[in-house]
Image 1: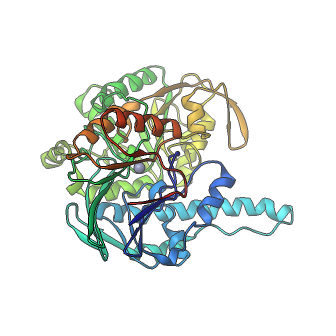
Image 2: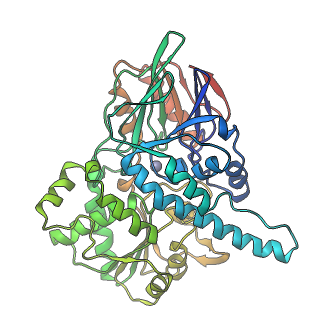
Image 3: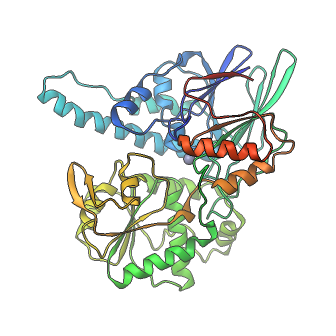
Amino acid sequence: MRITFWGAVRSVTGSRHLLEIQGRRVLLDCGLFQGRREESEARNRYLPFPAAGVEAVLLSHAHIDHSGNLPNLVKSGFRGPIHATRATADLLDPMLRDSAHIHERDVEFVNKSHARRKKPPKQPIYTQADVAHTLPLLAPHAYAQPFEVAPGATALFRDAGHILGSAITLLDLAEGGRRLRLGYTGDLGRAHLPIIRDPEVVAGLDVLVIESTYGNRMHEAADLIGERLEGVLARVAERRGKVIIPAFAVGRTQEIVYAIARLFESGRLAPMPVYIDSPLAVDVSAVFRAHPECFDAQTLELLREGTNDPFGFGRMHYVRTLEESKALNERQGPMVVISASGMCEAGRVLHHLRHSVEEPRNLILIVGFQAENTLGRKLAERWEEIRILGETFRLRAEVEVIEAFSAHADLGELLSWTRTLVPPPRRVFVVHGEEEQSLHFAAKLEETGLRNVIVPEMGKDYVL
Ligand code: ZN
């Protein structure tokens, strides 16, 4: 038994961990690496292992940094099942199509300049056709139902409380008379996030592979979301500005919509126009409605009462077309625009930012993790000058960061979840965090008495 780490080690994107059991290979997640363009491109395009040799994929959740390279795996020869929870499987359809669309469009753009310089055209990492070959390989499972992955490997999913459908993967492995249970957190959520349930407690792990996005940070409590949001929206409404919220189409967008809808319904805030400007978010919100088995008690209660509209379909404006999106730039505030991508690396949010950042009445609301070298990070750090789509702008709009929305457990929450593991795991691999976060979290775990805490390096393998 062996595990090799091929991504999201000492960094946060491109999760890929390869397990070997009885000579078969099983891949935990197959995410896209996101960062500087050329480095990302090479790491995503060329897989470090033969795809045809992978028996099955176990997918923790639908976020692109965990799922986004699946079509390339299939294109490269993978034919096995992709095991996922039901909600994750449904989310992948719109998400992978959207991702292929972005790759196709990016290459189109790059090829225009290649043509001018007489350089050979590039091919996208994958296309809609590759996505169409990938989706039929999905094998959806209910939470807590065990299934066989390979000889000597049985898996089951527990709720990770991170986004709709997110799972902690438990694997019971047997080889040559040895048995062990491995737990992979995927991304671990936090208590009291809107809509979804809290992360589940799991037991009896020998080996733990745990994320550490916030291994050195504490957030505001998730139940402060309403209060913090109310303050920001009320302030900008008074000065008739625009609130631009860069948000991932999956998870954060639905939680923000849910939180704003609660504020309007409770009368704590006068309703103002809210635009969800992302065709992907429209599709994803429909998947949310189809999976009440993933909701927490409060959301189920709202649905049962029937008088409320938890996802705000009645009063929010879902924007699909580019024309409608552009028209928003001409409108006067107060208004809220929620648009992808969450780290401002691509997508329609860039156009909204171009039109908003130089006006002090406006406010950019940062609600999610911003990786190094992204525009989102520069906004969160309030750089004086920023570049958007090749042009320089002065940042005069207010910037507010609400960490309560984070879908990732913070240091305290990671530690308290780990304390619920009884008996404690014999070995822990700390992944999915920038180096400083992972190393700090590993040191904290050792302080709690855990032994064999390892922060792996890229491409390194460990006998289990
Ligand atoms: Zn995630």
